[in-house]
Amino acid sequence: ETGVTQTPRHLVMGMTNKKSLKCEQHLGHNAMYWYKQSAKKPLELMFVYSLEERVENNSVPSRFSPECPNSSHLFLHLHTLQPEDSALYLCASSQEVGGPSTDTQYFGPGTRLTVL
Amino acid sequence: QKEVEQNSGPLSVPEGAIASLNCTYSDRGSQSFFWYRQYSGKSPELIMSIYSNGDKEDGRFTAQLNKASQYVSLLIRDSQPSDSATYLCAVKALNAGNNRKLIWGLGTSLAVNP
Image 1 (cartoon, each protein chain N blue to C red):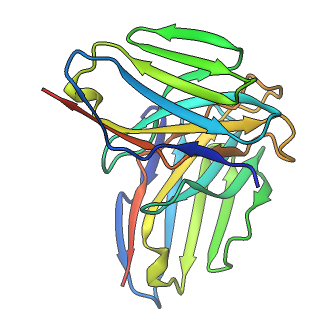
Image 2: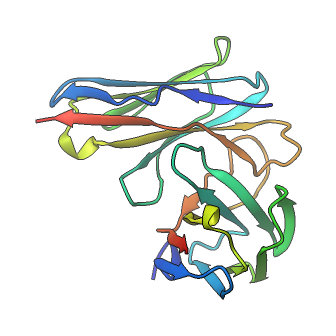
């Protein structure tokens, strides 16, 4: 596989379920991101991992729990979600080398999440 | 609050015409600028990146950056129906507190009519 992959591509869950989203990047990058994309809203950055360490968390509710076991894999654990959490969840990766001319992010295909 | 503004559209152009997409940003310290294309139901894919004032051309696409006026634009020459998508502008500030954070616009919807 090449690029950034995400599974599952579609997920329907009830509010009491626990599920996990998986992301894998095959680009040799050292930073990974979770974004949420809802209708009529700009992309919302949820979490950033650089060198497997979480470096940013934009005040995301605790019902979303990220995990980054290594630089190629990223998970988003979901529990007791709300219907308003229904959205497209995108994973991205980039190579962090510093300076203003870096940090092009490459996206996976996304997981379309529906919370009933 | 750092912001990136785009006209949501839809921008409708005939096939073969030039499509012009514009983006303004609020943070004067911004250093990196990106245009992504997103087809309906798909994820964003990078079209162009630009870092210096002026024009940058790649095939039918030209990105234009004017830091003094704080705008970046994307021109698509010889527009094709396959160019119909939402175009997202993203801007990274030099000292955003975290170099990895991009500020995203809402996107401009482009429709190229055969």
